[in-house]
Length: 613
Image (cartoon, rainbow, N blue to C red; front, side, top):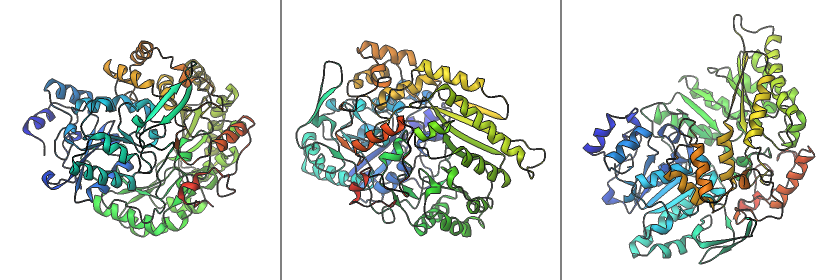
């Protein structure tokens, strides 16, 4: 419930619905009747945060408890932040209107390295000291999770706890523990000592990091009750794990404004550049009956007319052929669209296409990732040009006129010939459209090329590789444009400066904490948004702290080097990643998990079980 003073601010901002709360299916409780209050914070705009599945799951999970209340908070846009600071009003959670400082636990999901400055900004706006060492009371406890928690070291000084892995079970365990310590009147250190004993809980203050003279890490030494390595938490049985029956339905359009049904976790493919494909292993699938039931339940409770089947590679779901007809039994009569993101060109079957034709068609998206077969083999994409063209032709025969192709540039072993190959492959896709004798009259084809700049990430075979410099990326972008010879091909790419900064923080260590604070104090925030990105301010922050960012982004690591995340265990054997790195430099592929188990090691976290076997 917002106060009158808060409501008065809403008339002065561009999108007041970002800050009102009160949406369908939002949860309001009597705070006097709960033992713990949890603010789930998304360090980006409302429209992006409300699209995030993890937030939807944990929001409902915590609110299922009678003794806890989870509320939401998002990074306020510039107009709202200015009003909050001008009126000396704190950033508040949407359900109660209370400041973040009034909560027992403040959780941030770290989806993207360029959201780090927003974390500091939200804590400061909410009246919470930004550094863990300055928060001496038991509460609030600041917790971080999400994919960036696999290397949380650049943010180590700002968080009390990180949760590497999946949060459904460990979140409840942490809440139980904090409630017990609140009732005992414990101090913060006593709570953290007990929390560090929970599997999947990382307390960064309980680890000392020492460095060699050249700036590389000498040792990471645990203290207090901390284990030498922290294992990520995973959910073994996705059919029985908690999944929401309702989503909060926003008043305004959000990025992914639809119901989402998760089909499986992990990925069988082993693309060597893809962090998600490794850190979410082992493979665990939901049954098609479970997915169908959950999808229908969400559509019924939200009124959405579209449901997306969510995974890293939806067409790799073994139950896809049985699931789609089940869903169409209720989706078609109710005119609900079934969206399948993350399709692969090597298993986009005629049968699947015929099913998809029954609902309204949007553009199809495929990800060849590289322009030549040599480079696709080096990154272990295991997709051929023939498969790309065959699938495109199949889609065009099915009535599609728009195809989006995702590529990367700056990949290890890449040459300008590989860059030109991107344009050549896109041209061949265009040609496939005009080969179709049944192409719709009066309609042309659009082939969109989206090119991301490659950023080496932890827990991938490329974690040791140097990132291309900004100058190299600009040269490659120019070369790509020079090789596109038709207006039917549209090209977009990521800015090299933001990719550079992402690369610094992806593989950074604790020395970057001071840089992040310095940059934030200079006004840096919303760094993933071009209109707010202050590159020169970031460079000033590095210089003032005596740090060369190229040390983290553009330097090749030796296999023997201790990496900042080596004390976190995501199940993947380091020796396996080394082997995959060497095979990349020889352009040798590894079969996907269903063809042959590569013994990556992730199954050990699930009692030796992996659904790909």
